[in-house]
Image (cartoon, rainbow, N blue to C red; front, side):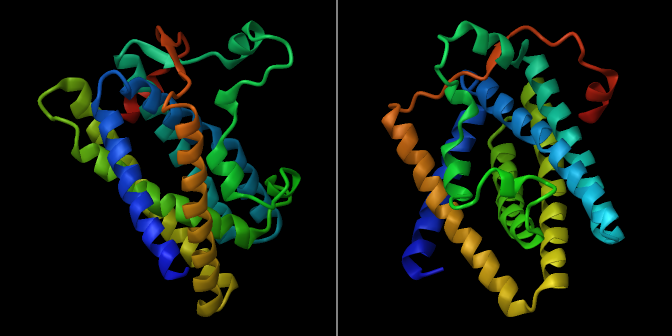
Length: 251
C-alpha cells in the first residue's frame, strides 16, 4: 500500500467509525443499521458452510473446522441483530414482497452493494462462488473485513448508553460479536500463512487493504449521489418465527 492509499485508509476508517457510531446511537437510524448487519451476518452462513464442506472434501480438516465454527458464529450474530430489532418492534423487510411492489424490470437498489462491487472488481460472480473461489482470495479478502469489523463493533458498542435496557443489551451483543470477529481474523491470517511465505502474505493483505480503501470511496460516492439517503431495510412488527434460540443468543 502506498502512502497516499494509507492516508485514505486512515481517513476512511475514521469516517466509517464516526458514521457507524452515530447511526447506531441515533434511535431513528439504529433499526436500519441493525437490519443491514443482520442481513450481512446471516447471509454469509450458507457460503461459509459450503466452504467448510469443500475444505473437508479436500482433506483440510483444520480449515473445515474453522469455517464451520465461523458459520455458526455468523448465524448467532444474525440472531443477536434480529433480537435487537425485535426489541424495537422491527424486523428486516420482506424483499420478496418489496420486489412484487416495484415496477417490472426495475432493480431493487437494496440488493446492490457499491462497496462489494468495488471490493471484488475484476472477479466474476461465478469465480466467487464457494465451489470456485481461490482459497487465498477468500482468506485475504475476508481477513481484512473481519479484522476491521472487530474494531468497528467495539467502537459502536462504546457509544451506547448502559442506563437504557435496549442499548445495554445491544452493547453486550456487539462486544460479543467483536470478540468473535477477532478470532475469525486470526484463523484467516493463520490459514494464509499455512499456504504462503510471509512476504507473499503481506503482499496479499496489502492488496486487499487497498481494495477496501477503493471500495469505501465507491460507497461514499454512491451515498453522496443519493444525497445521503439510504433505502430502508426494516418494517414494523416482529417475525413470528423468532425462536428461543434467538432469545438465548443475547442472554
